[in-house]
Length: 394
Image 1: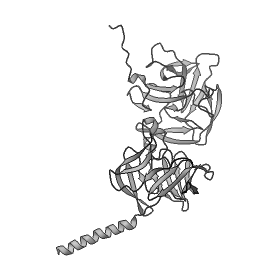
Image 2 (image 1 turned 180 degrees about the horizontal axis):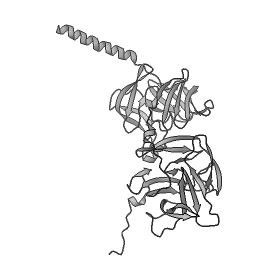
Image 3 (image 1 turned 30 degrees about the horizontal axis):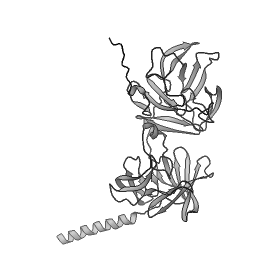
């Protein structure tokens, strides 16, 4: 009887092993007929072969959802023995970017890490995922978000397929990385992988840009400075908030008001308080959606400019999600403002240095002065390391 039970148990284990083996299928990453779509609207496909230095590579084509058939070459890749190699140009050195041969937790995936540029990442966990009725290996690496899936790649790609791994050095870096949205078989039109629904509607919260208790820090060729909104004033029957700009560590009592601002229906307006031209001007419109066009005032160009919204998505800020609008070369975020220019200069379409291309400015951080937490970035607030110690003491 015991022998019979043992034979049955062995038979079950063996059958399960065979079944699992039948269901598993290694699928290469470097293959044609597959489309990788990213949340910013970019599309990547392998679109043909080319021999470089005696080796056969697939060309990686890059396009967008607006112009899906207008490809430019973004690099080259080949796969051998479950290792994926990359060339970002024909003259570049070949480097491995994936190694799907890892077998257990603790193994080192010998692949290139984008920042600061090193090889090898430790396997944190191994699992499998069912894709089109077949199992594929799914790998989680230490200090990397998302997973690596055979035939799919990294689900949290930092730049594109050829640059999958990056160092998350700050909250600022994390928010500017792109994310894989889907992987689709172009022959069948069916997705092999789709980003799970994050239920963003439950987490979304509109946060006004014009608000008190927040400090914006900027850095650039003209030095570091900070901005803050504090106090009300009435001009021509309209209530505005006072906007301050300063280089000191914290807003001082004798800091003069710089301009005045207000927000209504997700639109931000500002007025000069000195000079001859003090009319109200629109500088932000967070009600816009992808494909919309608006006329916003550029304080640096001293003129109104046409702004076309190329892409709209949401990014995580704390425990909530906020809308991000992408212009030609510039992003603006609800409650944060523009990322590559002064708070009052959201509108530019040619270059972030308009009107002086020898001067650049970008947002360094946004800090909640009540909680002490950073909503964006994590450095540059001199108040974190500097404390005034008066010479004359009581």
